[in-house]
Image 1: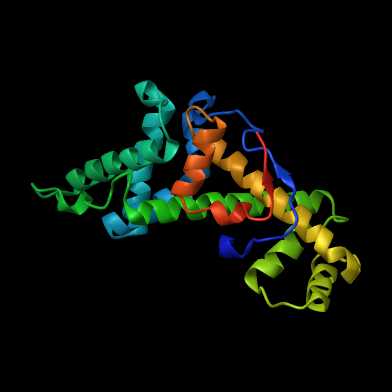
Image 2: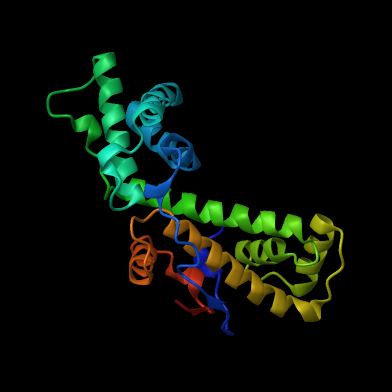
Length: 232
């Protein structure tokens, strides 16, 4: 995964932090919505329970509960906090089933909303989702190879324009003149930042600008917005 600190530019392009106002608390299907974030949950549970098999068993407990009861009275705050608590609950239940839960519950010491490992996994998940969304945008309009240009640059900041042009040709089959690369990269940075902001919005109960900004800073993703102008 590319480091978002590489996504820096010099010319501004506007991003609306609250373009989307849909909160996780408004999801029609709690289980369906949570499935978006299965990867960091499964990774965290695998570390706690010691195997992917046991992680999947714990996740099955959680998803079954969400299907039958939804978010219940827990529809508040940040989704990442809700999921961290849910992970702890289903991990505890699975350890109890296995007879491996000690009295001091030390096995669950890292399963907290502010666990460094959990925050890193959550951050990576949001970045990955934004990258995939940018890639889908490119598939819909190959005349704007936003994903290919930005991904190539992000993975190799010293890449030469001729190499980016070659990568675009190989991935999309179209020719892009080197003189267009700066403009495309600027558009790509703005598009990526917008998509990342949209991802953050959907994980908050009240996605207002200040709350979105705070969450972006808390997760260390501010560099993804360097070089773009942040609007409402």
